[in-house]
Image 1 (cartoon, one colour):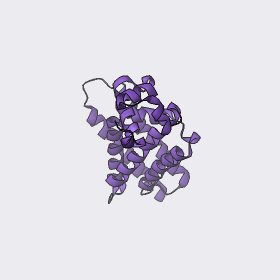
Image 2: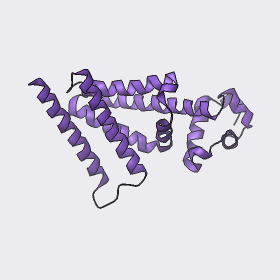
Image 3: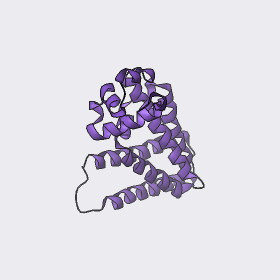
Image 4: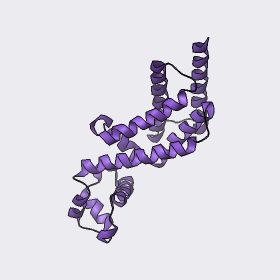
Length: 192
């Protein structure tokens, strides 16, 4: 690859691809450089070290995730918005397994940009759930519940822990249906 075509985004994309092949823990600047057809010191022009690269990869992932979610939520509210968010989040995590794994291992509070992007995801969820929940504390609880459901499903499914004859897609739909039923009843109880 010619140096003028080497961008941070290209390096990040190649690193994700390499990590999908050999595992994130096995990725080094030397292996990335080999994949790019360059000398590894060139990577230091773009990233301080592997930790810096991993943070930038997480930022790249969260930016793409939030953009995808926001685009898919246009014109939706209530039940339709919860479903769209849940399916978009799950599908994006499955399509970007290495990136999702990395995201879960980067502490959002240690990097301002990661923190702000993670907060943006939380804010998106709050806007969706605010259709049902107006109390701020209750909204935090419901936000955590939805995120935990989605993360648990994605993680357990990715690691092969869901076995049996029941259809995985049906399980996901039922889980989201149950969450919607819970939050809609919760909202009705609060209104009385």
